[in-house]
Length: 456
Image 1 (spheres, helix red, strand yellow):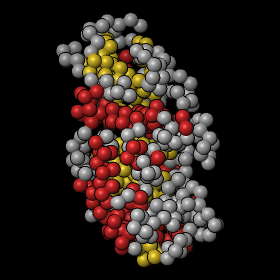
Image 2: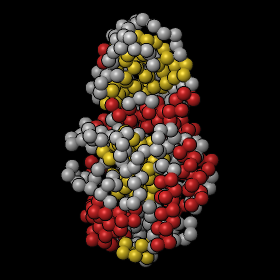
Image 3: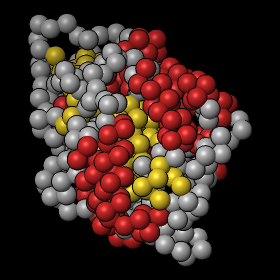
Image 4: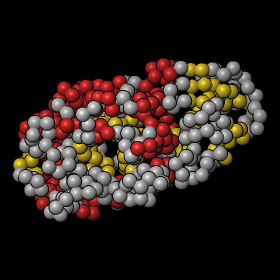
């Protein structure tokens, strides 16, 4: 497996990649690409979904605080925020306003509270000013009686069920008319639950949104281990984009203890017919569940999602509910390290990547499948480059014949620091073992070049 070395190892600093992290502001609204694998803006530029999850920003922050929060996340490389429009059932915003008239669970969708939604409008407009996509969950279903679907914690029918399908569709139309003027909005129906506790009402809400704002994309947030397409039929006409959601094998804090790893659910979603673009919308949050909520874990699931065929991922931390020290929580190491993922991908045509489902590129050294330490690989459709994410140090064997070009430039990318070290330019295109230079998680970057082309 020896190969010729045609270049001295080269270290590229984090600043080099960091300069690529902030792409031009997308021309919203987003739409589905021609091959239905990712999203593009109005100029056809692929959109890498790199989201944070400040779910309660409309309810817990003032307008000025929200402006600061969005600005800091943008500085850190995030380009999307997943938020709840109305929070959990019974929650008010900072001014004490409920979203609708009537005490929970009897909130009347026909009587929206203008004071509540005027504050939402201002935060939505601020996100637009800063070029941030907002993925908004209008009525969070809830896993455990805290949401707007099924039954509340006192076992009374929740507002979606009380209002019924007709009012739910009218509410969708009202929201579509009010927020359809904002091109940077995507909708998330459901919320931590499958739809059977209010299927007709949720469908009506989605159809109402499509009636009034057909240009805005919609996805569905199912229960953990399920994707949008697991719980809705292929011909559901309001469902544009699929979301996957899981934790990892051995995680016992979810209501379903059988949690596949992110690469497992991503590979399964990628293989589905008909094809829908998908992203990781929920997984382990940094700073929660003790050692499980590590920076390492959030990096693993982000790389597993994108190299597993998704067009992006969502990061989470305790700022989903804005503790008093939320400004400090903004600086958790995992959040700051994820900007390197975006920089790495946006420096090359990431949208060409397809997961190595049959292990024809990475032929050995991946580790045990269905564990939280599995190495995944993706190859560009034209063979021009490949990326492998190794959660921990091991020798990964790559079949270099799958990389196009006469030579292959091999580099190690450090996802913790953003530094890239070139290790070789290989001319002997056979199977070759690559082992990281130190412990920790690493990305192996292999780029094919023609005989006369200059090595990148």
